[in-house]
Image 1 (cartoon, rainbow, N blue to C red):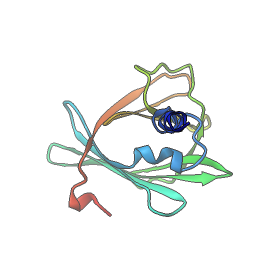
Image 2 (image 1 turned 90 degrees about the vertical axis):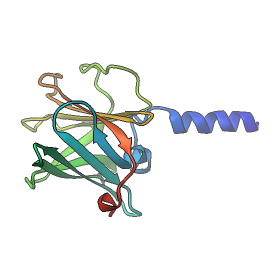
Image 3 (image 1 turned 135 degrees about the horizontal axis):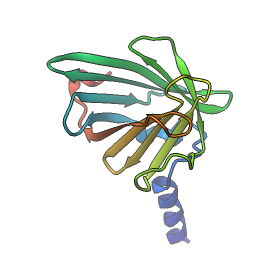
Image 4 (image 1 turned 180 degrees about the horizontal axis):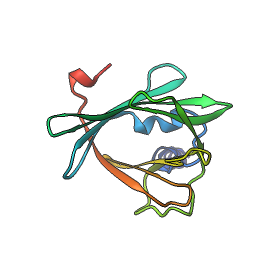
Length: 164
């Protein structure tokens, strides 16, 4: 019996978070993440305070200066998680969490996935986060998968100046 309970607990912990229905289901986003590879450096931070919202922010550094920034949150609206983005201080845009869309192919099967959609927004219409181990991937695209832009991050230890 203990073995079955352990297997069930592991399946819930390690299984995909598609269809997450609470903010607790999305806590795998929590932490500090930094982009990999050439180009500007992007740092993304997600915190999950003891409140009914996850708070996030990101900033892009290139050529020694800030090239962009964004505030975001994931909150429950009408009983479902919504990603709310405010790039560069722009008005908030809401994306509702949905089941992963088969129109846009993923490179591999992630441990966790959060798929947010707003077909009425000009661009992006999809915001997707996936996590496998210490690798966080994100992409934005149109509803049909066109104009996809991908981001790849590695977990970093949150420096003291990034902590709330």
